[in-house]
Length: 473
Image (cartoon, rainbow, N blue to C red; front, side):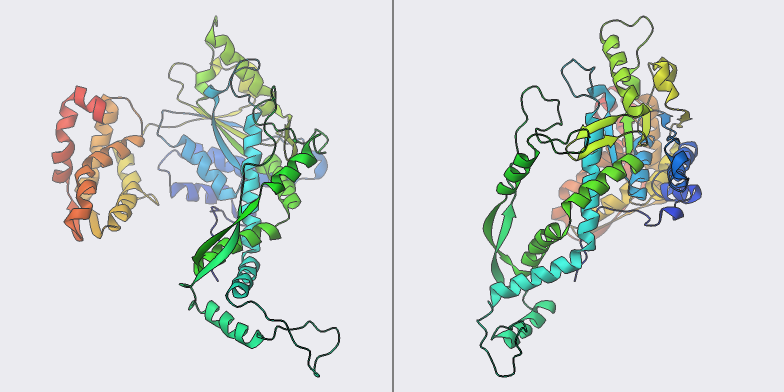
């Protein structure tokens, strides 16, 4: 039996997530930025500590929201994303510049919490389906056996006791078939199955309703909205079934997914998702410097300040109506980030500044940092390119001098052009490996060593020509 794949990558016991352990885990993926790592590690640990506090004091302890200041590409988003994945917390990243003040055309800030609870539902559903996956595969196997050899009507015997479940007349043959199925000897046989075809059911948004809302959305008291029952009924009617002929091994996986969904309690998923959103949710507010308003604000700056004032109650703690019920944002952790080139943190309205008591400044990346990013991080870019070209039978090896030259090129490009941090490495590597990636299918399996000279031949001239490098690097 295979285990159901999940997107989780977390330490199961929250007690293990000490600040030092969190920093060690973040070090596997992010180079440097120790001040930022320490800040988020302490914030995460304080969430666990809050759960251990007496009930009467627990609600009074609010999360210590964080503002990270630093140029693009230095790890702000990655720190928040890895932190959420590590703890198994619902996480959503939003660019606050796309929100508009209430009354203008655009998304309203409450959709942040709705997106967060949707992410929580996805996480919880995945976990619960993984917990029943073995049972789901067993039931899927039974269905496949029924399709390959339907049970025949049992005949009564003298040895049968009244009340005992009747066994099919061909039970012995079915058991032999089940053994072959478990051994994988039937994997290549074709079978026709019925699978659920999810339609676009449900009720469409009614005119004048806010984005992210639906007619059946729960009321503030947790009860279903006026059309909740109708929407749920229409949603179930929209699940049509269609027949599909597939291999047995694929049929078991498809049927197991359906069985896992059926075994999971949907109401329990909603309750747990709302709880996690309220107690563990993490919201990453990117480009918060874009909604800073300068002194003597006019025109668009007025709208930016309006977005800040709309964000304020969300960060302070308010109740947002979602289709899974009311969700409180009082204990959601908000991590804001921005480059703050044209503005400063002090340009935010004072009320919002006060809700982000922790401020950390991230450092620009140096050539030495680029070398470590290429060589030392888990799932580094070099490992990714090796794996991609390895599918063509090509073994790519990078010498230490080549890695040093790649870092040097990226560092020079950032210094002479716009500083985009580690993202420059993507551009440089694509340029260096462009020819090899194009011809990989033609040159056949072999080992290719990337040297410093190889790098200079393909990118050296671009650094000399500033106008050309501006468009290519």
